[in-house]
Structures are given as structure tokens and as C-alpha cells.
Image 1 (cartoon, rainbow, N blue to C red):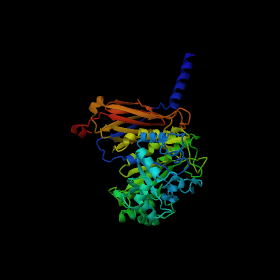
Image 2: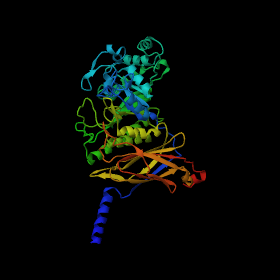
Image 3: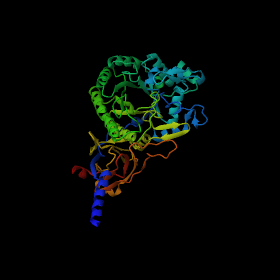
Image 4: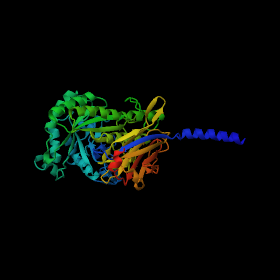
Length: 533
């Protein structure tokens, strides 16, 4: 009887070990700490705010609502949360909304501004109470740089030129008008988008036609007040490499822009009509979403290769100014969606991709900051919730403006039914104090992976001096999320699964997790040590 019970116990233990992922999957990571040369621009960690749903009104802006603490109409809690992320830039007013937005509607006394219909997002009334002064004042509170997207689809070169003059000029009639409206000093806005999705909602243009229109508009985007505009031309969607080719040919001829955009949204199904649920999903939707988000790597590479052909010195930045998840919404005009652990993995994977391609990708904006799509923050009245994606951006802060370190990763596969993806992604950087930061994602929801991390160029004989610390973001379920009135289900905690061992760092990376490590007190290997490797 004893042996029978013991045998059953052994079988049960093996079953539980398999279920819990105790197969001891392994990976190897080599970080070249002595080869970094490209900087990870902080602008990769940018945000996007469109007049869409409750992103602006109720999200950022509450006006004179006394029930929500605010400064100048902007929610104090949202400002404090975003300052904690050190957001570098905020893109506004769209999106599709931008190519119907006329900036003069949003200046002057708020009670005299015209009401318009938001024709792109439900024909809801647009009060224009939140306009240029309110946006730029909010950016000052956030401590970030504004990225204003100009109206090319239904606007004119003169309208965009005068908008730039209004916000940047230090003298002249438009500067006087700005002063009369309450702002004496210029804002010195640097970043300007030359239209949005001109191949679609921004005008349904051919790339050749848009290239000519873009040249016309950029001709009049002058350095008023001494601020030279950083002009971001409308780029491609997804795999439309022909658009990039045509625009880069135009750049080579005239060099009229400094950035070229790219838009790509991650859908679980890849079908815009039936995208899938934000919270009610099974493992097939988990892996399909992550498989689709990994396509960003291919898109970045393909568009970068074309840009390299015409711009080998990488003077033009690839600006991924719309990216993130997009699910089915009960209100397609508002695009509110919850944000689960799955979205956190999407954020970590994409930021790793951008970091590793920072030579070309130098700006990005996740869509969107509050209450819309893959947001950082959700609001309901005076309540606020920080999403899993918010915490990924907070964990990844050390990468901002750090030096990217080349990595070599050998990852096990994550397999479910007929789908296979690499289980792990990573990025590494070195800050100005010499600390190395390593971000890792594990997409496999069942299996931990033991990562053997070697640091090429570091003195392995002094590992007793190395200090390793970190944070981890994970949860009990794939669709765990943070909701109003409840304790957060998805929130970072201290990570103690990394140990210095045999001249390397051994990292036990749990399933469905994002980890950020800091490795400090490294010293460079001697010339003799380096020559033997």
C-alpha cells in the first residue's frame, strides 16, 4: 500500500511539475557592455492624446469641475502619474482628428470658441475648450515636449505656417495675438507632424501626391522665434514599404523633413472587423496577440533598410507615433478598452524592439495615454487607475537616453497549438554612471526560463563586487487587470530571481512576466582578459 501511494505521489508530482513549467527551460544572453555606441532616445517613450472618446475631456481635462483636483483644468492625479514616467513628449490633437482640426477654433475666450462636430469619432460635440494654450500649458505641467500634428488633409500651408508662428514667434501680429490671449513668451515648439495617415483618413493620397503636398507644406514651416521645426512626414502603415520608398526618394532630392512616421496596431486576430476582446480571451488569443506584435520587428527592419538606402547616415528618424493594441469596443467612437497583463507584454516587447533599433527609431508614441486603446491611465470621475502598461513604462525608465548595448539572445520557443514564437525578448543599456539595465519579457504563460547572462567586456574576476537588483511585473492570470475600487492585480514587485554565479548572472524568469534588472559596480575587463575571449 505504501509503495502504491508513493507511486501515485511521484506521478502526481511529475504532472504538477509539467503544469507549473518545471522543465527547467534555459536561455543564453550575451551583453556586449563594451560595444555600446547608439543612444536610446527618451523620445521613444512618448505618448499620444487625441480628441477621441474620454482621452482629452474627463481624461486629461476637467475644466472647472470642483469634484476633481486640477490645476488650470488639468487633472492633478494624471499629471503626477505621468511625471513619474518622465514622459518625453505628447502628440496632439490626433490622429484622424488632426486633419479636421483648425487651430483658431481653440484659441481666445473659451466661452466664445465655436462648437464643432467630431466627424471622425461619433459626431459628438467638440467644444474646443481644450485648445493650443491648454495643451501647451499641460505639457509644461507634465515636463514634456509637445508634438503637434498639423492639418494637411483639410487645411492649408498658410494655416500651419501661422499656427507655428502663433506659438513660436517673439514678435509680429500673431505673437501679439498670443499675448492678448494670455501667453507673453513663445512656447518654442520643436516637433511638428506634417499631416496624419495621409494614405487614409488624412486624405486618401497616393505617396507621390503626398510627397509633393508635404514639400509644399514644409516649405512654409519656418523657424519662427529661432526654433527650427523638426518636421515629421507622414509615413507608412504596417508593411507599405512603397510609401517609405517614395518619401525617401523625395528626401534624397530635397531633404524637407527630419522624421518619417510608421503606424502599426496589434490585433489579436489581424481582422479589423473582429479584433477580439480586451479581457475575455483564452491562450490562443494570448499567443496570437504576441505573435502579431512581434511583427513590429520586421516592419522596423524593412522600413529602416529602405531609409538606409537613401539616408545611410540615418539623419532621418523613424517615428513610430502610433502603436499599441486595439480590441473590440462596446463604443467604437470612444475606443475605451481595459488593459491586462497581455498588454504589458505587448508594451515590453515593442519597447525592447525600439531600444534595439535606436539608431533609426528615435521617437514613438503609444496610443493613447488616457481612457483610449492601450492607455497608461483609466479615469472615472475622481477615481484613477494605473494600467499594467503604465508600470512597464515606469520600469523601463532607466533605458531613456542611455547607451544601447548590443545583445545576443538564444531563446526557447513558446508553442501553443499551431503557433510558435520566441519565448523571450530583451534589450540592454548602460547609463552615465556605468550601471547596466536589462529588460526581459517571457511570453510563455506556463514555463519559467533560466537565463544565463554573460557580460562581455566586464571583469568576471570581480563578480563579488557586482550588485544585481530588479523589479518584476506578472500576475496570476493572463487576463489579470487593474480596476476601479479594487487593489491592483498587476503591479511591480521586487525581483530576487537574479544571482551572480560563475562570472555571469543567472536569471530565473517566471512565465508571463516582464523583468527589469540593474547590474551595478561593473569594471572593465583588462586588455589581456579581452584578448582571450
